[in-house]
Length: 171
Length: 275
Image 1 (spheres, chains in turn brown, green):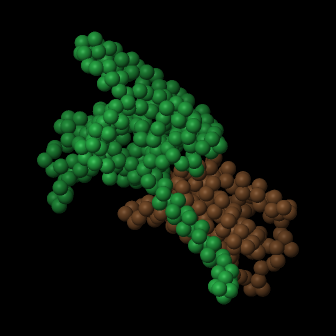
Image 2 (tube, chains in turn cyan, yellow):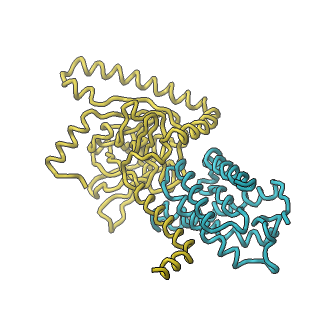
Image 3 (tube, chains in turn brown, blue):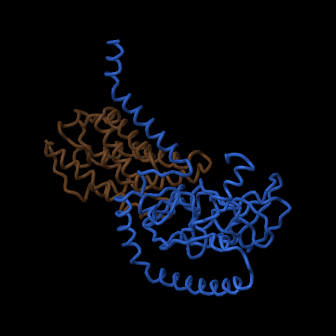
């Protein structure tokens, strides 16, 4: 395994522990959840193979499920995001394309690009997650409220983390 | 054949995606079934210990209230014990019926209240005689049913779970219905299927009915806070405030019903397999 592989593995563990030990207990106003772990899939290097992405997404989602007692739920939503990620990245390629070896971060491509990139994917993740958990549309508006509140909370934490962690601009 | 293989290879990402999603969907559906003894949930050793650590940190900040709750519960139990002892010396019931319920005290390792399907992980399991289907109560009232067990841990399906249904009874009038959470407010739940001719009022006590032999009869669930009777429905809409605050659950007791098997098998003989 090369160096970046090991770094990603450590990041995987860090995101997982962060999610199940800390963020599992953090729920604002009974409605806003923070599913930070999805950032691991979003921030993997741009050239990552879709197959690898989905496999990582499945393992991450499945591990989160074990702690949330929600077999398959997080895995379902995360695999969906992992599958669509590369297609979405191709759709919103900035002028001149991505630098080779770059990551999908604020530092590499700017805040505006990052929001356009991550908002729809995180929204989709939450949409699937909450509606499958509610197993139907009986609580439609309350579920939508949860989705939007969680979207804002998760997004805020992801973007803040981007500014807090030192990002080397790889060339 | 070669073209088929080429086709599959070309769209391998899509097919892998399909496969993984179907697998997940199957897991979700499988997990919705009521009782199971699965390994991949928070009753397994590693996740239970990690969650226990996390809960330990939380608990540290609420030690005072936990202590108060336990002390109060202790006092109530002592009073009950005395009352029962008097009853026992007077009545001559058969011992199997008197000893039909056995209690196991357990510590909460993990708990959630904000999801639609909330579960509680506790630190007692198969080794302590727990099995899926047993009732769990807290210091102030009913908590839930054991869903799955590992050797030393168990996952409890909380009353705050939209899939959980418990037979409840209005203590004053003895009308019984189904207690089911509506998924929104962690302090309130609903009582369904109370017929129109019953007259529930705000403040009535709701207890478990004992009809399914999971919970003993008369375990506190909560107090009615709101009753409405819509003209088109055959049943009352009843809102209950839960007596147990699920937000700060620290210790629970698992009830082993020794006569459940006998009751279930008798009912099975009479009615056929339950749905």
